[in-house]
Length: 427
Image (cartoon, rainbow, N blue to C red; front, side):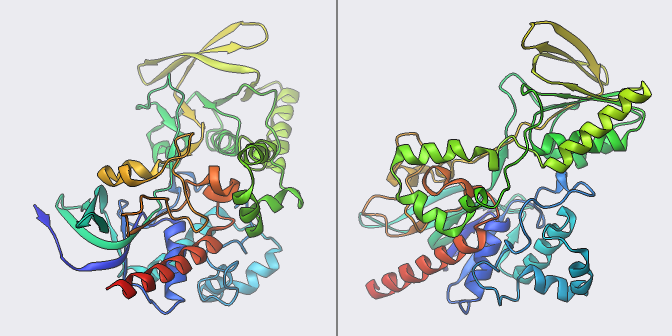
């Protein structure tokens, strides 16, 4: 069954995570000048729910919320949330710039609740089609499957794609009953009953958090951390390095030559990729050392190592770990393998079907994107196609992070309003 409507929205947003939520806020603060609807495949708002580990904190300041960097007076700021929840004074007394991940998720849910009439949850986009007027593509038609299994169609003058990140597993590993990506952690832990050994693959923040959480949650289990580095690498969150996430850094990166872009991404990967907060590194080391002192080692670090073989067994897995310097191999049987092996941006053009043929790609395959986050299209495409999150090659390291979410939402809003005026003048 398909339901369709001839109503044309000014904007359809695909996905309703923090990026499109920030966009909804920016549009509202412009007086709801555009008719916008958002389609979200999750049944309710959620942001990395599987990693909302108790005690973990955000790695960015609360001031880099959904609105403050764009509008410090916004009623959707984190401070406004605290005031509404009756915790503003308590948070100030907490003396931190980094709220817990659980609290920040509550803030996001609080903000999202204000837009329940604009979001269709349980609606998974399955196709985007161009709507032609002669040779010109004037509109987009977005088809989604709702929770009842029916197809719904929404037409729009502009499209904003914000589908987030997808989990990455090594090519040799297939997820299964006892092989998980770290993003599933809290959803899958109830499946474990008195585990004896747990293996965590990866060297980044998520890997360290998972190892820490498993070690504390299961005091009778051995936790084996496996990674190719010598040790966990501290994240570079020093003040000068953090400037790479400033709004002005996006401008400088965008206009830089391609070789400079590549250089900057290489230089500052340590601010975001395969790195861990120093405080957590020190805590894990302290714990491992104390276990050596006591003679009972539950936290085992297999550094300079890689997974060479993986096989399912009854109620668990069997893995073979290779020591890289020597080539020696160790076989372990475990209750579960957790792959904290990161995420990557989804290719926004895969949703566009025929419309993707009208979009320009860079030599590396990623979409060509203008400074205002609008995908470069053929001249006959009048509808705007914007993307949030998948723009690291063009806009820099902050593209998939919260740091510039509020600013980016404001820039897209201005572009949409300008484009809407141009469209109105043609009607």
